[in-house]
Amino acid sequence: MKTVPLTLVIASILAMMIGTSCSDDRGHSDSAEGLAPRIAESRPMTLSHKAEPVTANSPVGRSLQGTPLQENRLTVRSSHIDILVKNVSDAMESIEIVTTKLGGFVVSSQLSGEVETRFGWMSIRIPAEQLETAMVDIRALAVRVAQETMNAQDVTEEYVDLESRLHVLEETEKHYLRLLGKAETVEEILKVRQAAIDVQVQAEQIKGRMTYLETTSAKSLVTINIRPATSGKSLVEPGWAPLETGKDAVRGLIGFAQGIVDLLIRIAIFAP
Image (cartoon, rainbow, N blue to C red; front, side):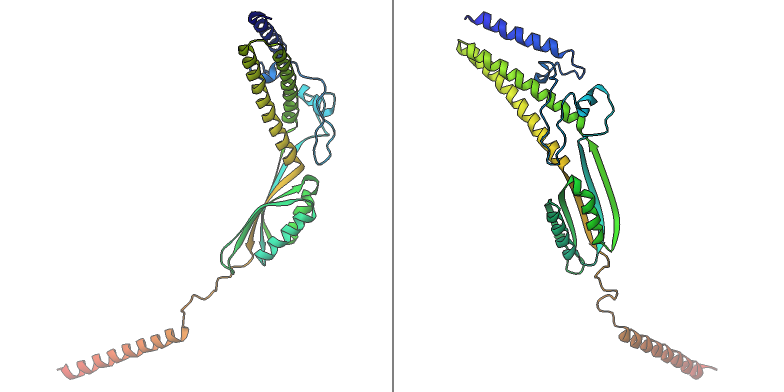
C-alpha cells in the first residue's frame, strides 16, 4: 500500500467519526472522545456499595435524556462536626475505634497543645451506608456539639458521561491499532502509533476520574474538630498573693495617716 491511500483511509475514518459525533447532544466534536457515537450499553459500575449497573437503558442512563431519576443515584457525601469533650485524647481514640468497627479508616489526625489545653483534628472515611451511624457514635462522645454540617453532591450524570466517552476512546484506539497493522512506512507507523498513545492517555485520565467518583461515593469523608469542654487554664493568675496585697494596703493607709499627723503638727507649731 502506498502512503497516500493509507493517509486517505485515516482521514476518512476520522471524518466519519467526527461527523457522527457531531450529532451528540453533549458537543464533544472537538475532542477524541467525540469521534464516535455514544454506545447504547455502558459498562456496569463497580461500586463498593453495590450500586446497580449503569447502562443507557437503566434509570441512570436515561437521565441524560432528561428523565427524572429516583434510584441508582451516585452521590458523594461529606460531613463536618465540631465537638467539645471531657478528654481530647480519649475521644480521638474512641473515634478511631468507631471508624474501624464500621469498616472505615483514618485519613489523617492531629493532636496539638499542652496537656490541659490540647485540641485535636481528624479526617476519616466511612462506608456511605454507615455515615449516619458514625455521626451518632461521634455525637455520643461529646459533652456538646458546637457545629455540624453535611453536604451531598450528585455525580451520576458525570459518571455516565465519562463511561460513554471512555467507550468512544476504546473504539477509536481499536481503529488506530487496525491501521497500525496496515502501515508500511516508518512515517505512517509513527503517526498512527502517536495517535493511539494520545487516545490511551485520555482513556486513562477518564478511568482515574471514574475510580475517584466510585471511591468517594462509596466512602464518605468526615472531618472532626475535637476541643476540651472546659479550659484547663487556672482561674487565678500565677503570682497573685492576696495576703501581700492586704499588707501593702495597710502599710499605705498607715503611711497616709502618718503624713496627716505630721502635717497637723507642723501647722500647730507654725500657727501664729
